[in-house]
Image 1 (cartoon, rainbow, N blue to C red):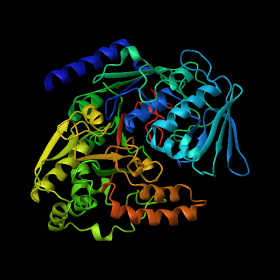
Image 2 (cartoon, rainbow, N blue to C red):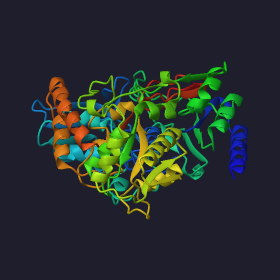
Image 3 (cartoon, rainbow, N blue to C red):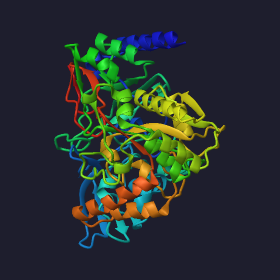
Image 4 (cartoon, helix red, strand yellow):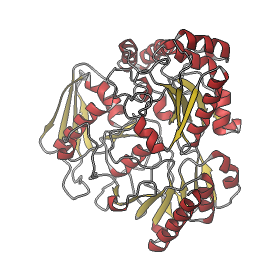
Length: 522
C-alpha cells in the first residue's frame, strides 16, 4: 500500500507538470493535509495558511507581530477606548463577484466571537457590534480592551475570516461546506482530493494594498497563476521530488532530510517563521487521572526537555530548552515558577500518579506519524510512562483522525485519550490570548484536553486587560507562576521548523505563517 501511494503521488505530480505552465505554478508539499474548509474551527496551522490565502481579514500581523489594517480604508478609536469604527476599502469582492459589505463583516465577526477562544474572550467585553451603511462597522465595548486589533488580525489559532452574511449566519456549530472568500487566492473545490491534493488559483479581482508586503500584512501581490498542495506519503519521497524539481516548496522539511537538502545547490533551506515552534504534551482534564493536578505534575517530573527535543530535532543547534509556558526570548517568556520541575524525578512522578488515583488502568497516548515532531514526542512520553509502571496504550493514527478525536471530549474506548503531543508556532504560543492551551473557560469548546478552571481564567484575564506593557509583564509573572501549579500542559522545549524550496522561487516572506503571495517562480 505504501509503495502504491508513492507511485500514485509521483504520477500525479508528473501529470500536473504536463498540464500546467511550470513558470506560473507553485507545487508545494504541506506539513499536513487540509482537514476542513471552515476557517473558524480546529486550531491547526494548515487551516490558518489556507484561510489567509482564501479569505481576507480586517487586520493582519506584520513581521513584528503588530496588527496592520487589511480590508480597511480607515479606522478610529474613541478617546475613552470604548468605540471602534472601521470603514472598509471600496471595491472589495467575494470570489463569486458580489461586493463585500459591512453586514458580511458583522455576521462573520459574530460567528468568530461564538466559535473561537480569542473571540470568546473579546465577547466578554463587547457591548455591541453593528453595520452602519454599506462600508462601516462599529464595535462598542463595555470596558477598554487593548487587544481588539491584535485579535481581529487573526493572532490566535482560528482566523476571523470574512464570509458572506448568509453563510456566516448559518448554524454556527456546523462547518461550512462551500468556499466564497475575498482573499488573494480562490480555492478550487472541484480539484480538492483529501489525502492527495489541494488547489488554489489567483483571484484576478483581488486588489492588494498599495504597500510593501510585511509578514502577513501589506500588499498581497500574487505573482503566480496557481498553487498546488500535493500530499506526499513520506519525507523521503518529498525530498526526492524537491531535488528532482517535481515540487518547488516543502513546508516543514523533515529535519533528518535537511543535511541532504542543504548540500544541493538548487535548494534553499531556512526558517521563515518568526520564532521557534513550541512543543507540548497535553493531558485530558475530563478523564482520570489527569483531571487531578497531581497526575499532571507527575508528567512534569517524568519528562525531560532535552530528551524530547533531541528526539524531535536531533542536532542541538536546531532546538533549545525553555521552562516557560510562553516562549523564551519573547516579551512574555518568563521561567518564573519552573525551578522545582527542571530535573527529572521518576520516583516522585510515580508517587504523584498513585496519589491521584491511578491503579494501572490503560492510559491512551494519542499520536500521529503524519507530523514527525508529534510522533517523536509521544514515543518518548510513552516509553517514560512504561518505565514507571504505567499501562500505556499507544495509539498512532492519521493526522485527520487525530484532529477528529481532538474535536470534542469522548470516553475512553470511543475515541477518547489521556495524553497527546502537539506543537505551536512561537508567534501564537508566546501570548496568553493566542496560546490556545490557556483557555480554561469551562465551555468545552477550548483546545483538546478541555480544562475548566475559572480562577485561571481570571488570572489570564488580568494579563489581557492590563493597561500598559509594564502591567502586562507584572500580571503575566503572577499568571505563569500559577500555571506551574495548575499545569495546562508540559512544556517540551522549542525547535526550529525549516522550509525548503527550489532556488527558482524568490520572494518567500518572513512571517508567522507561510504566505504564498509575493513569491515569484523563475
